[in-house]
Image (cartoon, rainbow, N blue to C red; front, top):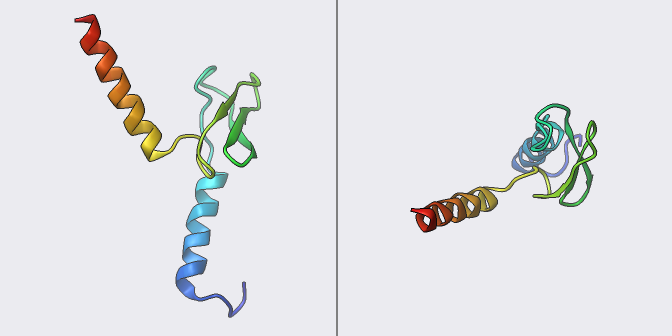
Length: 79
């Protein structure tokens, strides 16, 4: 970057790139590693499982909230 763009912008880019390059476990095989194939598409290197997710992480905060709400609703139906 050099002396361009401003400090806060560079910090935000650094945080996003750290999240992008972090290792995320595969939800199917629990081992291996998810790799970002394209914008919002993640693929496990070991088992080949492909999932849609966030742009920079396999799951988003909104996705976690929805999953929690749906699982609570389904548990309420069973009871």
